[in-house]
Image (cartoon, rainbow, N blue to C red; front, side, top):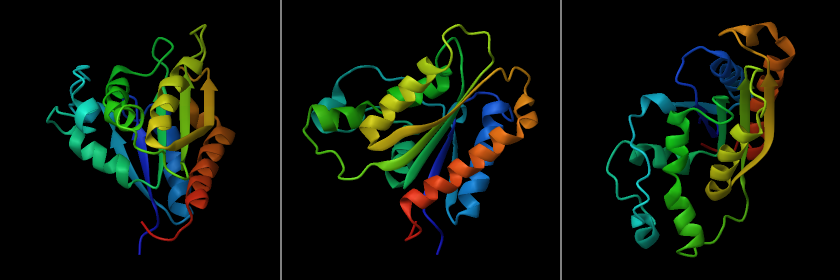
Length: 197
């Protein structure tokens, strides 16, 4: 039997950049702890943005028919969720923000339709890499991910924030940082427990 599924969302449109490498390290930790990492690349989804149509406020479901339906299933079945993202102009890249905005049905279920919050939040983690030139740091990139986590019933208190990794592989020089990402992966699985997928 495989261990608990940990949804690992890559927020960068660039493959094998610093945030991707951090996520790779986290998945090493997930696997070592007996979990099953499931990678989701935001930029490969081809989903449209939230139209703000309000359809989900009536049904709790998004009325737009695209591949986000598969993402909803992945979000729902994950026992823990990790997001890795670079900082683009003090926030997350547009592809990741689109995925976050399409979580509006979860908000509607909770705050419009009165669906109760889960009794126990799922474990979560946010890994953020900033190049160092943004005067606003990483907090504005953490906020939208944590906001989505809140409506998904995910604990967003665990974060790893790196500033100053400008080159595409600079993170490889920060061995302590990669080790911390591995540890976070292990901790996510431990927080879930290895009692099933």
